[in-house]
Length: 415
Image (cartoon, rainbow, N blue to C red; front, side, top):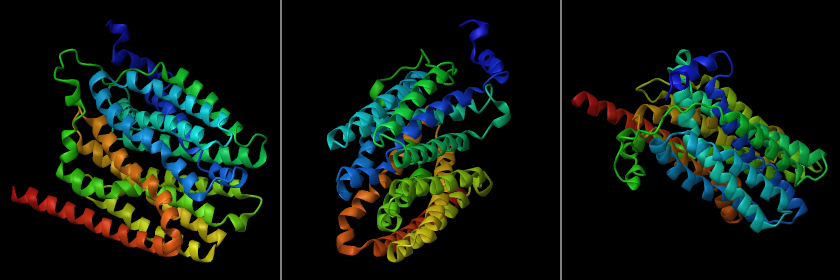
């Protein structure tokens, strides 16, 4: 490698043009856009294609089938082979997913296939891209922003999630070809982000001296860390459990209250919840205390009133109350996402950062099955009761996290 092509030289050149982390963030943004553009269209598929509530919620969670393997394989493999080889294909896979969804015409099998492709792309950018942005936010690439990697990655994802849903809803509500045009926008966006990301420097180059079997890289030793098991694991499912409750469940409950504006309202709920999530993410570092548990506990504490507001919305079918509930749940989502990523980046070693990030996100995406589970049991129990139960479980999760933190402190003092 010549002096002109070293990471430091590339980083120095990038200071005068586009920051290297922004190029990686563009891929996260575009793929996240594609991952969430489907959400407000759930209403369209129910109204125009006569798909049932359980079917559309299963399709909503279908991309987890693509996300989890991509996370658990892509993260550790990027720790071994580098970030670029694993992340650069992601925008192209997301492009293919949006193309399949555009051609699906309400056919569940094609919709399922498109969602799985979107999930594979999203899994890659969440594990590999998050680690890449973290490394590109430190010396020698961007020494002035050390410690900003978790927030930058979370903002890239959440902004993509929010705008993808909002734009898709607006197009589906007001433009022609409501089941096609939203996806074509993402096709163009993914192509542009791929071209933009091509010039991103490698931050974790492959070590030729690194030996061992490939399957050994798929083991993540830090996933058995006491703090990961006691603090990160209990809060993880709430990350997307809160978001899915806000923009997948609540809009479906208020369809009769927003007649003629069903898809637009679903997009508004996405925008409100994820917009509040973006705002919360900018404050998360101020709330978090290294070595403490304030950030994660505060995030779970916000989820409790959010769930109670969702219960009240389900009971009253109030549009105004739904927007307030979406805002509260979005704040909880934003704090949980950044808090979890910061915990992961403190726990992980340099050779398993992407791998542990993948485990965190895999646990987080368990929450995306919440709408399907609640849709299946709501005829028996009812959404108001289910949301109240969610508030109780969130409070118990906060207590478990705090207890694990206190016990960890006691063990450290005893040692």
